[in-house]
Length: 201
Image 1 (cartoon, rainbow, N blue to C red):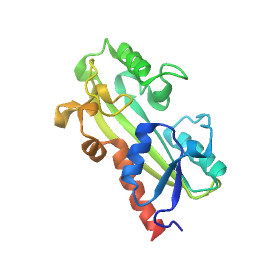
Image 2: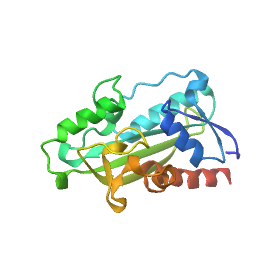
Image 3: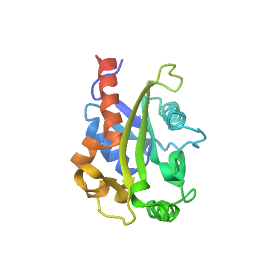
């Protein structure tokens, strides 16, 4: 049974993600796995769900605490679903956000703007312990398209080229609050929060 303010390990070292999780799961004490000196597990899954499960189980095993992991990425239709599950390492294992962004823009440069439909997908997994047979799984999807010129200083990853039609700007030009309301991670987190509240209830 989950208790309010219980420590939950977040299987990520990404500062942008850590901030978003801490803001949206304020009822719990979200601790990055780095505080337990947990190394990131190799993401060998073919799907977002498989990778999120690998990460959550690894964090729970080494911390002996409940764990949350997300696997998320950008799916671009004109690129056959790429970068997909390798979004964070699209340009190579130690690629920076800028490296990945430049590779994406190069790959899509010959595609007309109106044919650049894309979506961010986020799958979240919560496990009470490393061998939890019934993990809680939540998923969020955010539709948009890719623009050629990065715009905006907020967000991270592919946010500067992800166009949000309704607000006529990129994800990186939205306020943090509005992005959380619209984004794939925000949607998945709200789903997860509801499911965790039931477990805690």
